[in-house]
Image (cartoon, rainbow over all chains, first blue to last red; front, side, top):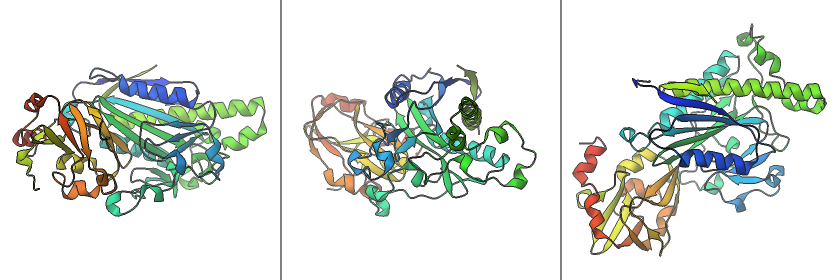
Length: 271
Length: 128
């Protein structure tokens, strides 16, 4: 839990949908520009077109060419893990300046777990059967498993802190540490992409109706399947998708901020 | 070759150096290996690569996190432990010997004086 006596300045930054190159450049600059006096920054963003981001060490030659998502524009993240098709989702990046007294890993593990746990708790309050995975398909060499044996896509892998609804992964994150701090990057699936229909998003997954009783909130109204709404092709439908995206973006940011606050005392400001 | 940690010098960033003449053998400490947990990939340096004390020479990926490795000395890489990349479990079992990463021909051996002794490094890690 948070024991710091002085709050660190923290900013929530909202960016418009942009290309993969621009999105990755901004994330990388945020990490590169960190100094001990930098604010903590939570950046919320989307992508101007469906884009495949590769984990830092993933080999492009191992992309399964028969998959429809393999033709999407590609970028490479600074963080580890598997590839993500960014489409009907929110992406976040979180940069935290390093503190030498915290040692090699700094805040990395507590932040990773507490942000995801905060999302789990929020989803459970809204009636979804959410939990941390607490399992690992990781290709650690010490377990005699080659990296190439792992699914190429992040959302087909499982690591212990992934957020699942039922058995489906809807939030995955990965990190990069540097001498100056930490970058955590994550993707929150709202609806299945047409290119990855086997990977449902939150809004494709059922809620426990008993738990959800009385939750006729904005989330209930706006929690429509964005693919279905988009298919209507009308201005009204586009507006509904935009509203749903706004709602879930703000909801995710609030949960992530709550998780960060469990580890680092923050004085939040929206930019 | 059996190297004891008492024979090494350490960076605050957890890399070690074992010096024989003007060549430093470099690796990462048992503490770092334990902290990183579940290593899945290591991007090794290349023979002939110039490295600078305090600057990155490679990267290591644990489950979901990529971390840089910093050189304790300045010089040129003259040998790399290439098999290590496919046997990262060696870093758990023998981090100070078979788990070496690279050998560097030093251009400024005086830099060694800035590195920590084993005793000082243990204090930094809160292990003494």
